[in-house]
Length: 494
Image (cartoon, rainbow, N blue to C red; front, top):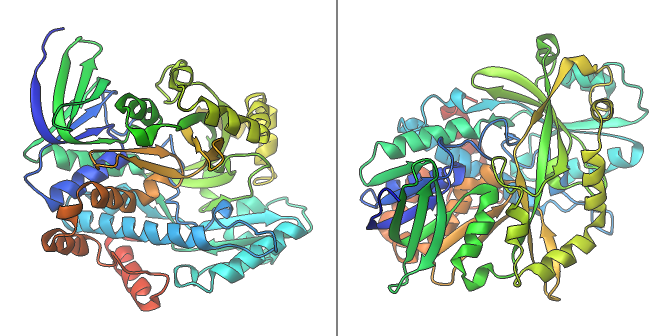
């Protein structure tokens, strides 16, 4: 050990992704004097789940993700989750607009661009489902501009590449022009650059947290080590946030808090087909989502995805799911075995038994040949050729497993926040919609963990300045919804 010292700080953020960046910026804007330490195991920020090539980048707003509008037993479509996610994404856009206006996030086109969001289905039953979904959603202010069509000529205009050479009898699509593509990696780097320029903010890259222990004053002792230099440090903090993507679960287990007991994780890897033919890339300008295969996790919903990465247009298809025992793309094969504890082994076994179709799906995905991946692409591009596409490794996701009411386990496919009863530590687990709703999720954490300050007139005033709609429902106020969207679209150049 080359060096070791103790120091007190107000906040420790573990993980340098979109979540920690958002929380750090919010806290510094609300309380400029607050002292923050940021610890990241890699040598650069936003290099794991937040990186543009490692996440969907959709700007998950529920415009095109069909899994957010399930069909109920009576045949109706439940819009509840879609409406909630759409509202939360508007909060994100409001905050990002504020950052642009204040010069914190730079030029908006470096991290967000207008790309229409579409849902596309074929087969009479699926077309009927999409029609019902459209009728339910378009009645709400957040989705009032949604378009529906089952007319081939209209569909060819919306997505010529998808319709080329198609021979299905029944097909339909919905379209939202207000959809976006978000480079969360670029946005995160802007926020950390801003944080690093502020007083009382210190960042430690290339350091891995080795211990997370309560101290006598009910704060947290966080010990972390640089593997290359063998340098070890330890800080004592009154509040710790764990935003380490797939690495959050092992760190949460290190904390030993009661609220963490029973949680487990199921890692799922991903791969993209990335188009290498510029002529094909230029023929498509939308995010087109289809229906997931039976047993597939939401992160594996197939989509043909126009992306803007570092100023260049790209076209991706996938993601293809796979199984690995790593919790992070740059993690260890021992991550899953090490996460199994006496407190979560029953929920994990129970969830495994209940999700056998998912296991079969992942095995089938792992066994896919290049020709098999091409066959999965052809429903979206009937004329697709293998030589026009390269296989790229996407990010790693850890789906949450937690205890159910019967004492067994349930596999959760959303974003889960675990916070101690005293509000001294909070961790974010899970995947989609994740980054897209980061602002609302971090505000909820601030409310739980800094309740007195959050409810103060000063903090409430600052929050309303950053997010004018905060505390009001856009779904129930069409005028406010229109006003907020118009402002965000103007500032973000959408």
